[in-house]
Image (cartoon, rainbow, N blue to C red):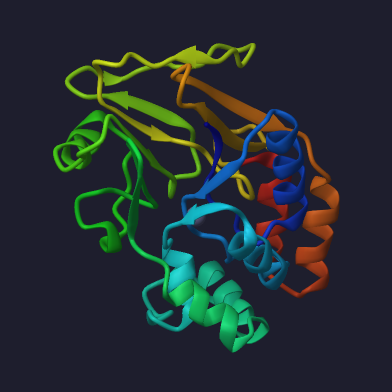
Length: 243
Ligand code: ZN
């Protein structure tokens, strides 16, 4: 079984379509989504439709929860609040219900999926350092757990700390069968690691192979749609810079 891990799509239809095309061409037959399907981008309905029809799973992100109406928008930053108010108005009741019914975490075979962290998954804490990763891995019952939320690809090994899994040529690596990993798959729709290309990962369960993929997509089309929708300009700018 070879599957794709898609984090933080954020209503970026252009990035999502490019990633799915790449993943299918590389033989992925399941798609596990790490949440934040909507928010920030200009295509929430289109992205929810695709996400809800893909074979695989999806966990709840903080933007999904807010867009579904399950969470007050008052705690959010101004940019997030504006985009989520806009998003709520564009989603159908069925789409809002689908987002609101997403589970905080899922276990599929030997892998766990959660948007933010396994310790209090709906408090939306950020895993950026080894100490945070250890708190999450203390509750991890599977060898592998994928997270999103920071929009930065990162990997941690239990008891070791942050590990570099990928070199500049983006070669895949083989996971050790005796190590527990917590891996951030990066963001499909709004990368924040300085590389504006869409990010996602592929895991091959038989080979224990893992690949970080960076995919060119039509950034200008996604950015223009954000501006045409009247959403904050910052959301278009950061797509171009990957920040
Ligand atoms: Zn996000």
